[in-house]
Structure formats: structure tokens, C-alpha cells
Image (cartoon, rainbow, N blue to C red; front, top):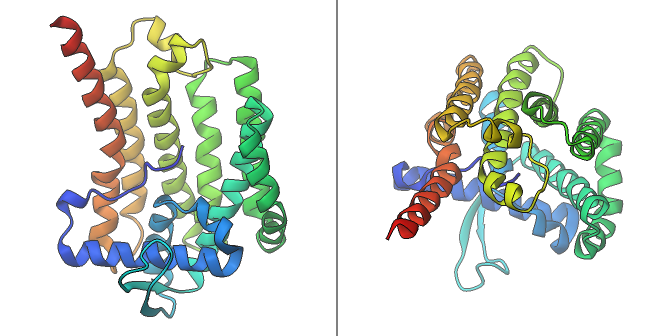
Length: 281
């Protein structure tokens, strides 16, 4: 369920693209420094949004620079980072560890087990620093696994679990901003979960795999019905987002929430339309 919280590069200015990339590179750099090269494998753009939000809200002191790395050995690239970047790197590794462990338990995927064992020590150091967040991740992932084993066709119950998980990650500290952050991220998490379920629905039904939307699809619910649900969820998210006093990078964050989060959904729908067109020919 990663890769949904991304920017729509087509509508970002060149300056915004450079800033977004620099924040992403800062996260990559922090992952290497705190968790090693193998920790870097967990890198994704989703946590970049977390950095943008918390950085704009709390305005920590930022550091920046240029460097080469294994991914870009030929030319230097810019990065920006701060304490919040380190927090996002820790959350990134914690999510990766628990996700890989869950994959091993569910599918007996040997590569997932190997990677989970590599990250195990790192995870427990993160958990010692952030017990609330990690305990919430463990609790929610366990509950999701139980719902799947029960084959419970309740998209609300499943999406609420992932929403709760995201809500706790976005709350860095329990302060006056915590309620809005938790509400915004919870709705975002629900949107991510349902988006992923919609994308996987055809394949899951074909292979008789668990998907909380299967019963609704069998009842004849259309793509428009699912899109209406997604629109409502991201609408709730943006409503709480706009309550936060965010100034720096707010145009990039709005790009992500109002456009970027739909990228994978729209790509999946375009592929479906193409397949249907090919079948008619």
C-alpha cells in the first residue's frame, strides 16, 4: 500500500520539483545514515509528504547540501534535511519491517523474512524511541491480518485500521496540532487502503484472494461507486489539512492531496479501459 502519496510532476513548477526531490533525497540520506544501505531499500515517496507537513508546521532548523550517492554517482544532487527527516526515516523503516514480517506470515515469502530479519534490530531501536507509533502499527497490522483471515467483507473496518496507523505516524508529539494531524492522516490512510483495494480488485477476485470490496463488486457496485467513496475520503483529508497553519511548501502538499494521490488510481483505470477496448476489437 505504498506509492500513493506522491506529487503530480506534470503540474509542479521546476522550482517545486527541485524542492520535492531535495526533500526526498534528504530522506534517502537519513535512511542510510541511521539504518544503513539495506535500510535505504525501504525508501518511498510517501514519507516525503510526512516531512513536508511536519516541517511546515513546526519549522525546525534545516540543513542542506549537495552530494553524489550510489543512485546518482555521476553528478551531485541537492538535499535538505532536519530532525523531522530523521523521524520520517525511522517511521519508514518501522513500516517496512512490519510489512515484510506480515508478508512472511501471510504468504511465507522467504525474501520478506530475510529482509525483516535484517531490519529487526533497527526496528526495535525505533520502537524504543517511538513506542506509541510502533505499538499502533503492530496493533493495526495484526487487526488487518485477522480481518483478512476471517474474510470479513467490511471495507470500513479494514480501512479504519490503516487510517489509525497513518494517524499515529503523523502525530509527532501530542500537542494542539495532534487532533488535526491525526484526523487528516487517518482519512488519508483510509483513502490509500481503499485505493489499493480498488486497484487489486479484479486480480483478487480472479485468484479468489481476500479483498474487502469483493462483496460490493458482486452486488453490482460500479467503478463510479468506488470513486465516490475515494472522493469523500480525500475530501475529509483535505478539509483537516486546510485547518493546519501550513505555509512553506503548501503548494507542493496541495498538489499531492488534490492531484498526486489519484495518479495510481487513474493509471489503473486507464489500463482497464485499454483492456476493454482491446477485447471489443
